[in-house]
Image (cartoon, rainbow, N blue to C red; front, side, top):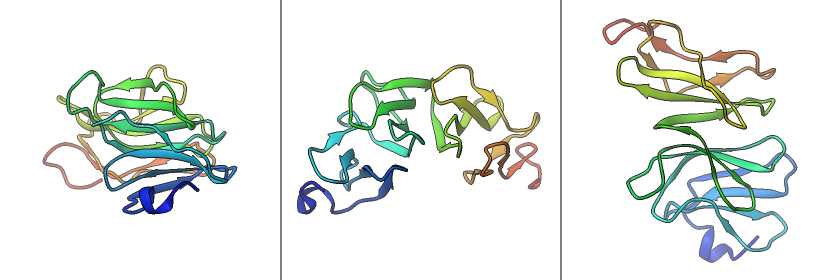
Length: 169
């Protein structure tokens, strides 16, 4: 890989794509990079001053999906998709999303989104964008940050509660 003494200290997140050709990581300075496993130049994936939160690599290894919490400037908070070798990011969903998980079949992104009137809710969105689908039950108020997607991508398991004062479901 590229210069390990300069870039690989303080790694907080690390993923390898399914074909084992790329590694994506976040360093101690909150930069998120992609590098070909056989070496070459690093591709920076996040805008300067903006920290990428949890990320996932699509099953075809072509794109990195991530959430971004914008601290101002011209970049909006949301779920983004960017080519694994860098380039222009595409906004898939505008809003503060947490815990992005990619379905095993690589077709959907599952995430938690805060709605002022409904609390934390669980949604699903096609990898290419489109209209989000709410997955959490009607009347639920809170969804935990632990999301499990079945191996066949047909089910999502999560923990939540019915309203702000209710016991766990």
